[in-house]
Length: 112
Image (cartoon, rainbow, N blue to C red):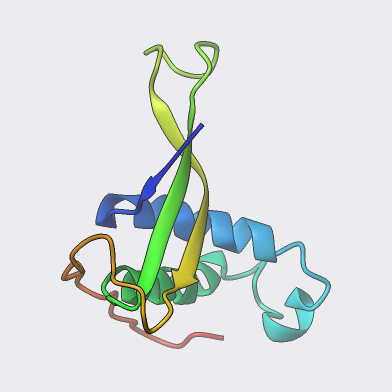
């Protein structure tokens, strides 16, 4: 396993990880009563939060990668994002990378 800074291409996977992980919370049915009917509407806020974190110099967004077993992938040695963390940097800490300009998702229609 390896930990590295997140990139824009990781956002689809990390938003899905957040959606799946937090869906197990006992509070989830109260905060998101329509999650089963409209899962894409629940994933979008996670995606937007992560897009903002990726472009904020006061945050460090990291992902954890694991090698995909040969039984799952045709290619050996391919890596898959399996987790993530977003850290708020202290005022005295300098970011380790340049912030990225990321186009934010535009919401259309109603979100339940």
